[in-house]
Image (cartoon, rainbow, N blue to C red; front, side, top):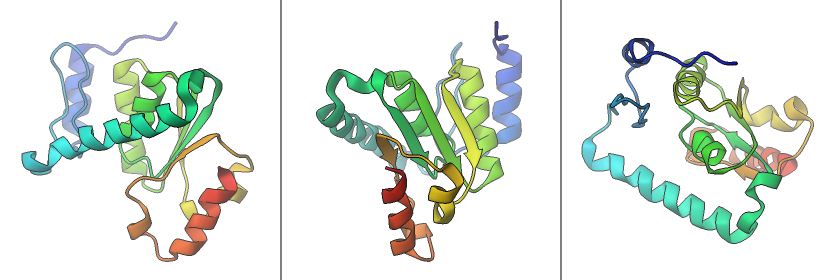
Length: 159
């Protein structure tokens, strides 16, 4: 049985791992505070609802039968959303260790244990993973890469 994080451990993690990009509600009134302008924060709820609408339209009630890959997962915002929505196995990839540390912390604080976080790069995904996923998230990443066509080929190869 996994030990639940205490409120003091969550507070400490929020402080040590900041600054934060996303707002995560971690229970007991604890949450991360985004370091971005408050006028922008609402866009994440809109994007999440758009994602849910698209995923629901395609997969319907089959979320419990699929696996999800989140490329460029950042702090795990969308990975966690899919895991909490019922996808039993989510693999989340990010190039930056600090992002993965935040994502792992949030998962643990929320008690979500069906997300596997891995360090990796979109440019080498197909070889690194060696498999495909029914649902691949590739959100807000394309404009960060040097060779967009290579990356899109990699995304297609794992989807």
